[in-house]
Amino acid sequence: MTVALAEIRAAQARIAGKVERTALQLSDALARHCGVPVYMKMEHRQPTESFKLRGATNAVAMLDPEGRKRGVVAASTGNHGRALAYAARLEGLGATICMSQLVPQNKRDAIALLGAEMRIVGDSQDDAQVEAERLVEDMGMTIVPPFDHEDVIAGQGTIGLELIEDLPQVDTVLVQLSGGGLASGVAAAVKGLRPQARVIGVSMARGAAMQASLEAGRPVQLREEETLADSLGGGIGLANRHTFSMCRDLLDGVILLSEEEIAAGIVHAYREEREIVEGAGAVGIAALLAGKVMPGGPVALILSGRNIDMELHRRVINGEGRP
Ligand SMILES: *Cc1c(COP(=O)(O)O)cnc(C)c1O
Image (cartoon, rainbow, N blue to C red; front, side):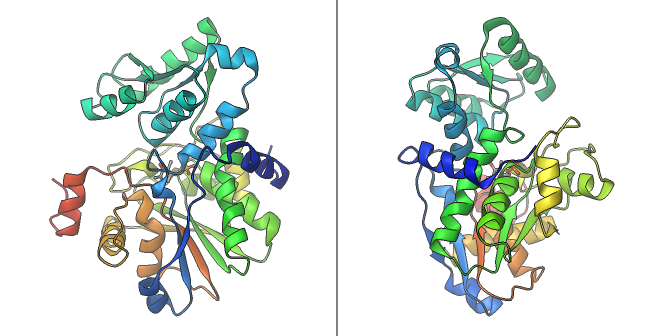
């Protein structure tokens, strides 16, 4: 079960005007470093500070009238939960975000500000997921998962369409890889329009569940570890339906990065590009700086988000390490 180019094109029409059509900006500093033109897709500038708004907006737009009435639910408190709350509000429908009581107050506040209803249950992400599934059963709400869903993948894939529109001669695309919604969508779009382009996934070395699954030939679980690229944490789901096979079939490789390399990416984004990005957002830059890609022509990478605690950002910029 894969998402085809036609579905990504349909998503593009559906979300036009509801998400930013972000700039693809040349980086002089990275071009000098790599000897080829390097462009950055400015997805951290989306209104919810990450690309996840694309998939969430497309999934909300796909609801039928009954689904719209009953609203949407998610168990993510990160960029996906925020994006879904925003997309639902824009369409005037209800969103419920389930979270455990361990979720810090600042994250709760951010979601409450978007008008979403919050359900605080248990003390793990799994408890929150169970509650979300109960709301689907009992209330008929529609669950919008963060990556393993056709409408979400198609929405994220619109980044690939814009990329090829703006840089038709692209040689290598570097794409963040966690659950694989972004990588699946972008790779489907890029390969559909320019089959000779390489699409390479980038993950942190600590707990790269998709890479471990690709190596094993089936979805596997890894112990979750703390990482600067916290938005890339988490598994791909043992019952993965879409993103595992799409990443297996479409990606040309996966690059893994150390914490030091990711930190260098954040520092470069700030000092050279004058951009604040979170760890996950900086891994494309980090892969180039670490010399882990050998591009034969123009490179495109994605600044995927900027949802970083500013005290942590300050420490990374000053080389102070983690608090
Ligand atoms: C979710 C996320 C990713 C990874 O996307 P997947 O579809 O899960 O692979 C990358 N960067 C940021 C900022 C994210 O929020």
